[in-house]
Length: 266
Image (cartoon, helix red, strand yellow):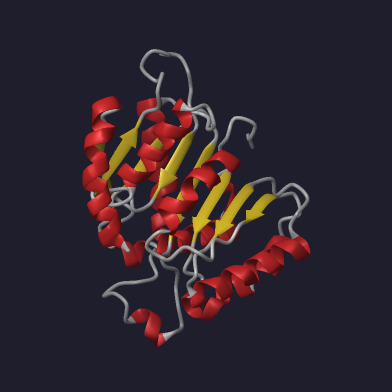
């Protein structure tokens, strides 16, 4: 899957840089004990509208050789054709992806996917305590925030939505790997939703034809159908004709139009 995006990223980087060259900076993270590179896309009109404040779309897998060029090209196109509101896009480049995107697990097979796993809580802390303040100081954005990601990044997004829903306003998860830890996250979704009766957020879910991901995402959709808080706006739009390597590209335009579009605002 990442091979496809890496090759696509090389093509899109040239197109993107011709119109809106991305900016980059680094954070010496005290939370993660490492330096993290951050890539930032500014939407059309950002420079000209000096006092304007734009909402922020955060994304894991946000390196220039990862999904950042694809996502920012999509945003650029949708904003230009008037079907999406202008957003800053903040891409978080990976160091140890499988560590940052996964929560704790009791499953031995899960622990074998990488030397380190189970770091999602620390990664959230990095976003909350270090990245978001840095973005606010550099770009003076609007208060509205969203996050998008696929696969393990989708797992991180679903986990954040269920465990720390106030971190973002809008959550967009493509083919989230909710099989992690024997589906415990989505098995407990009903109780977590019940504990948040005043929740006012937006959630967009989709998946491709992956058997292990389909079952877990449908469990979450079932919990939402049965007990979503009244203030939660949510969408579940499966794409069974897509595959793990195509779901991000295929689903992003519709997702962004739906939850980040002109008529959508938290």
